[in-house]
Image (cartoon, rainbow, N blue to C red; front, side, top):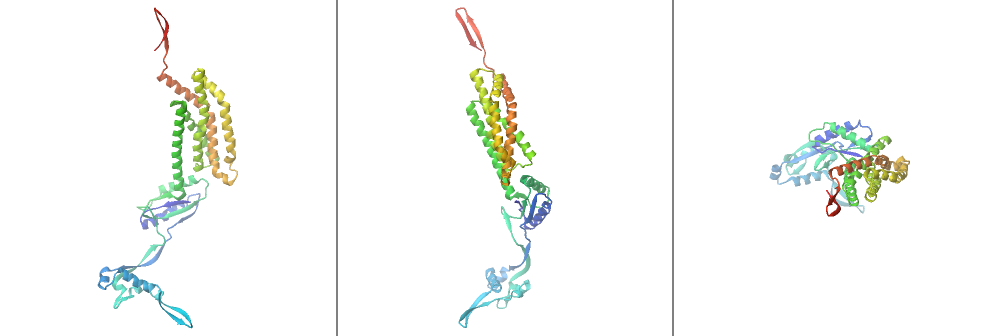
Length: 371
């Protein structure tokens, strides 16, 4: 359900509520459009003249009690008839006091009627009154029937942005739409924290700031496949899909870690240069990388197909993970080695290794000198 909150003044809120309902009536994908502004009911207002009431020895409270006694049945006494107790109720005929004029003629004290001590008028009041942040508000509710929940909310928000509302009235999404926005914000925060934790753990493992940065470049490669996969399957970027993106942060970097860790070991232990280590590392780790990705994809395929109605909710999660794995796996084998080689070349260009030359003396053997 989508709920629109319109805080403002009473009359403006009612006008704004009607305008919002009319504007949203043309939006596809919503049904059961309604408002909690249920109209008004008539009432009679008694405005007590404090000065006149004090002169008569009365006040607003005693006048209210006197009026209530006329409008409310009062038990007067009880009689016993044929052995049974019967209550005697004193009640004013309701049909006789339905107008301000009739109320004005009610006797309050000897020689004093209600009209002498107050001003009586007719008015109207809302049947239901709601508030939001201390302001008068109205709720326009609708049920979303389109599976693409996010797209409908975006269309509703666009309609509200273009809608001219009375002065002092604002419209905003609430209900489940508001909850979805809060969930999205929470997941985005979790993604930032996850990337930071992954980077810090890799820095501690590799003992370098550069290699973990290259590994994190795998994440954009996953997005290249994740979003087109959603578009091709016609699924929305909802909360399950965002959870899939969060999962990809931990999944896709694994293949790159496996390859670059082996490359670093070849350079360190075998003495290979960067290009040779990358070539041998990609060839050696190709099969494990492909097998890991393939097994994960096959395991998620039934969920992505959404074979049952209950699985449709999680189908977008599986779709995102599969699409991200496909693109990141194949691009990792081409893009990451190129980027690693580029960064390694830049590192050696700006921080060259010291070279050695041989220095000989007349009375000494040849000795290496580091320059």
